[in-house]
Image (cartoon, rainbow, N blue to C red):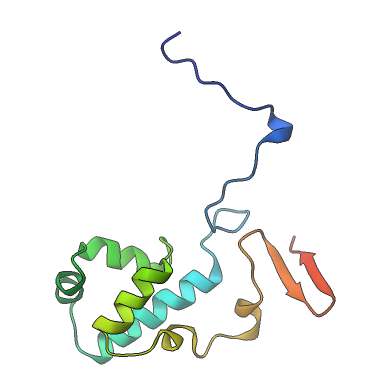
Length: 118
């Protein structure tokens, strides 16, 4: 009984993808922001370790952010913008239209509302 864990019926469980696509892949927006983070870091010729020290986090965490594996919170994005001497909008620049329309639920924003991607 010590390992008993109550669970909701399958029909009531919410899909907990934590910002991932239904197939488990990272959200394309997170991947784009991560690439822009890496671009800016390289523009300033900062190593992962140097940036990590500025922010008080591990270089591995920054690697996860740059790959889009981990999502960057708004407050952390603000920290990156200060540490990298840029504005928050920099991380969203040059995003293609298809990427910009993705939602974590696997839906896209269409002109007439939401539609499901399959």
